[in-house]
Length: 93
Length: 159
Image 1 (tube, rainbow over the protein chains, first blue to last red):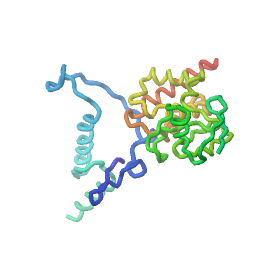
Image 2: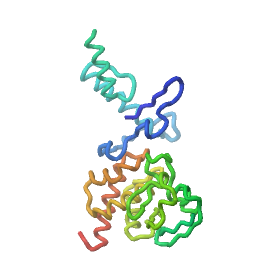
Image 3: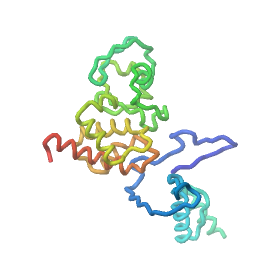
């Protein structure tokens, strides 16, 4: 649901009315489990979490979409509209 | 205009411009900075207060709308037995990360628990749906409200 819209250099999704973020009704229950590792470049082997967590799940879901219907979406969010547009391109070819 | 209302159990009499936003009256006029301003446009719920027991957005209300009402902010909630249990539950469950949304979350939760002392997780999600949290995935906040419901029922000699 989150998508930054930029038109002619101006950010059009600049507030919560146009840039939607998930509320309590949008997110499922989740379970977090920490896997201990060691980051050589971080102090004492530490690494920040947070946004880094996006580096795994987003490509994983994009790969799953590709696996399911051979559509490689390279722009998040992976909306139904974007997927449909790609599928239609395929059917033309 | 002269404004008379009840705030956290105390009578307030204040002389102010009728179009002053309630969030500014609370934070700047009365020094109650527990109520947060997030977006200022009624989308995020950070400024939630209870007006006659109903969650309202302090950034969208003007002071004149408070005339004759009973207002509760997080400072007032913290002084009630249920409020203490609710806040303790947020601490115990680790429901707070940056904390900015929490005063609004707690007031929305308090209003829900007064209406339904044993809400389902879906009902809690619905009750908190007007309050955005950017740090958590809401899971621990919902856990905290569930725990608070249990604790408050126990305190009242229920379950």
